[in-house]
Amino acid sequence: MTDPIQPRPDMIGGVPTPPLAILPKLPALFTHRAERLAFLAEGSNLGPYLGFLAALAQVQARLAEALPPLPPLDPDHVAQARAARMPPVDRQAEADDEALGGTLDALIAAAREIEMPAPARLALDALAAAGPEDRAWLIGNVMADDIPADSAAPHLFVAAAVQTHLARRAAGLDAAALVPIRTGVCPVCGGRACASVVTGIMGAEGARYAACAGCQTLWNEVRVKCLCCGENGKIGFQAVSDGSGTADADGTGAQIKAETCGDCGQWVKQMAQNRNPSLDPVADDVASLGLDALMRDSEWRRGGFNPFLIGY
Image (cartoon, rainbow, N blue to C red; front, side, top):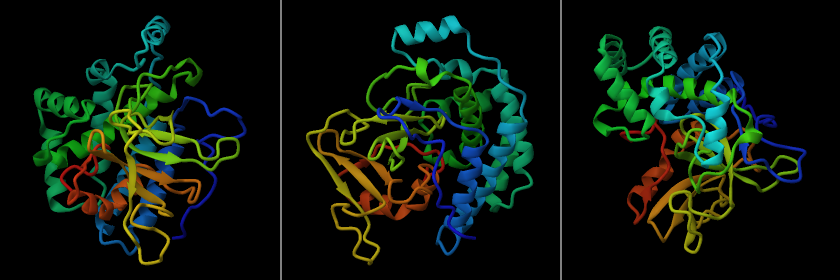
């Protein structure tokens, strides 16, 4: 398989001022992610896991296209959220939405056809048999971007369903009606960033977008600013050297680097899509696990949230 490096029309382009938010285009977003994960799996020590996630992303793509359309949000609610500078998608309300339950059921059924390790199969079977209270607990943890490390496997499938549901919800919004919430907070659903990307698309060269781990929205952030605390006085960069001489210890030249903050002690990955348009914030976050290993022994703690990296 060749690396699917190509322009990303779901990013931005042709406008002098980058828009606040880029809503997910479905099912293309999940299809591209599946292709990227499959490519990254080739020759990687994480190959089996990346291949599994590629198959799961394909399931997300199929569901995003096949599930019944979601009813639009109440315009009055959206207007009130805008006036109060709150995200229009209420995660707590979405957790109780019957449509999310249907998405989870559909994902469980489709995921049975995926090749996966025995522990993942056991987790999927347990999830299929879980009662309403257990499912509500799992969904609540994913919606809160707070997944216990000792139960990562069942949460992974729930997270895939939540991503699909929230992305469909986000795709139905008007991006022009959104307003900034605060640094590091998704203006659509209030979620945390998985990572950020620096674009190279015409009209927005060098613009930085944070990628929501939940609804898959991209939102514009200042290029050098901590996505965890909003400070910018003690920002630094770290990267893993690949032996090619393209990445220095401070992250110079690296396509994926850790943006560190000396104020809050946290770090979040930043990806150079202006150098490699095929980079995907979720897929490449998982594939760049070596950077996490480097940072684990440092003074900083991970600030980005990725439900597919819990336990690593």
